[in-house]
Each structure stands twice: as structure tokens, then as C-alpha cells.
Figure 1: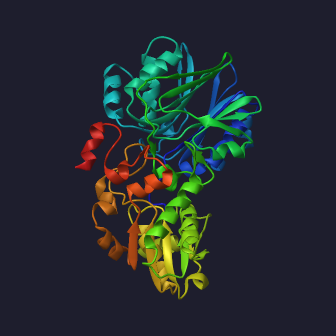
Figure 2: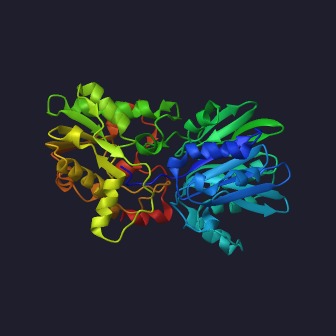
Figure 3: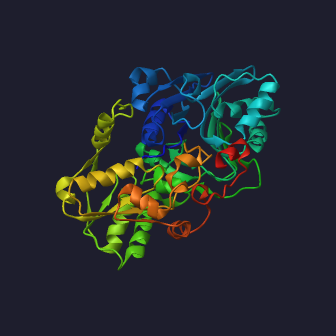
Length: 458
């Protein structure tokens, strides 16, 4: 259920005609990663041109806006704000212009030492135009001396946290992933040009072909001289955020060599194996959309039919907020409807990808029972989410995480479910086939120092 929000999505094009249009379609494929703002910057070989705004990609761009962005090189961004407000200055790409040329940057992730870096830079006389941590990256780069790629290396060594970012100049495109590999980033081909995306699903949309993942700590430079590969540090590790597989990424994406749909199916099969011989049920129902793959896996392993007991209305806007409780409940029912004829009189295994705040899942269980479901057994295709994320997900304190406050038995009672079971971190490692991921939101074992954010754990 959408109780947590995505981070952001980035997309890049190098040496492909109509780069802005390609970026538009690429961002549209990444729209699930952020709906608050979108933007594209292009290079026409002499200057950087920018268009951005609040809302969905289709709200921000029309044909005339794209035609005003000529060039073969482009970067784009879809935004969900985890750091910084909704002011236009925080909508990306961010552009810095100086005597040595211009830079445009897009960023997915969160810098955990941003507050200390910002204070240091302000003390040196730097003036910030935005409140997001992404602008710090540009300031740090501008502080350093030497060729741009060396400046980027030095700046990255000062950043701690999650960052997958692209930098566009008048002539070149730079692609950078943090040394922990917390956020996904991939490279692709397109008719003599190159593509970069937060998720591989966007390559298919624009007719491109997946090449390879950007490695943790790697910098890739595209220029007229060719492609250069280097690392800003030799202290690298693969710890991709496990929530990318559980919830964030599209099922048709491949992240660090694993297909998202296939991984989610495995988690469903593992849940079914745990329930074997212990649970009597009639049907499996997945909560749309990111839980449907796990529901399919549960169905295949258990032999129970997977039914469409819940239907998602894709045309309810995110601004549907009404003042009364009755109207709020009506809004929930508009977003997720129960297929009464499917669930009536049935013992249901309800599959959801994660349980974060619990309010929406509680309403869903209530809706199913009001529609005549005999029993609702809730199965969560991930461990209990007990710790906030500081790497680009909007869970800032433990108080807002229901599993940090209630035991599994208490959670079951709160949801009004007939039973409740979670997967464990070891189950996830089995589904993924390795343990090279970040499980901090489940275990509290963070892959970096948290700096000022450590106060949120107290």
C-alpha cells in the first residue's frame, strides 16, 4: 500500500536527436518515483536550456515546451521531496552558471551530512537558492580546483549518504553513483547514443537497450572524446535499498541484475511455504499494484487461486483531501474498491508489500469484511518496518512507524485481521539470493553514519 513515498527518478540522454522528447518519455516511465515536480535540461552545444514545474510530467510539459529544448544531450528528473520544500527552486534540474561554464544536476537520494556541509559552505560565503540537499552537490563541485571530473571526485568524497546523480555541461554528461550503491542507476544504448536511468524499464519505453548498471562509487563521463570510467573512492560496497525490490521499482525493471517481478514472486512463495498446513483459505488477493507479484507467487506455491478482490482507481488525484471523516473515508474507497462478488463469503489471504503506518491497510481489511469476506489473513512480503530511512524515503521518525510501537499480535488486532505474518530479513536474503542490500529500515543497522539524523532514533 502507498503508505510511504518514492524518492525521485533521474534520466539522461547523450548524443541522441530529440533528447528532450526522449527524456520526457523516460521520465514518464519513472513517474511512480515522484509526482511533485518534473524538469528537463538540455544542451544545444553552446548553452544549457531548462524547463521545469510542479506536478506530473504531463502537467509540466507540452509539445511547445519540448520544442523549446533543442539538443542531443539532456537530463531529467521526477521529484518526491524528502529533503527541501515544494518551492520551484527545489524542483530539479538545478543549474549553476559561472565563468567556467554551466552545470545542470539531477539527484536521487539523500545526503545525510547535508546540514554540516551547508553550514560550512554558508560560512565560506556561499549563497543557497534552494533548501534541498541536492544544491550542496553543485556548491561542493564549484569549490574544488582542476578538471571537472577531478572536482566531482573530490566533492563526492565529502558526501555521505545516498546519491545517484547526473551532471550535464554544454559538452559532456557525467553519471555518478554513491559508494554504497544505495540508489539504482543503469546505462543503456540508443542508436549510437547513450541513456541513463534510475530504472531499466525506461529504456524499453524509448526504444533503448540495457547496457549495464553503474557500479557503486563509479563515475562515467560521456564526451566527444568517448566514454571514461573511473571511481571516486576504492571503498565501495553493494548495498542497494531493499525497498526498491519490495515497493519502489516497477516490476519490469532489473536492478543490480535481479528482475523486480521475479524477486517479489519469490517473497510470495516464501510466505506460502511458511503457511503450508497451517492456514485454511479460499483465495489470494494482492493489494494493487506492487503486491500483485508477491500474490502471484503465493498463489502458485499454495495452489490457491489469485483473484482480483481489490481494484485500484488510477484516476484519483493526490490532492483529494476533504475536511470531514466521512469524506476522507469516501476518498479511500474511491482509490481502492472491493470486488464484492469475488470476496463475499471467502477466506482471504491478503498480500501487501509492506506495513509502515498501517492506516490504509486497516481500512482495506475493514472494506473486505464489510463486503462479506469471512476471514482476512494478512501477509506482509517484507519484515516489520521499525526504523526510519535517511537515504531518500519520507519516514523521518520512529513514532510514525507502527511496527516500532506495536508487537505483531497488537498489529493484528489493530488491523482487525484474523492473522498476520511478516517475512524476516533472512527470508529476503533467500529471495534475493544474497545479502548485499540495505536492510536498515528493518534492522536499524545503517550503512553510513547518520550525523544529525541520529536524533530521530532516540
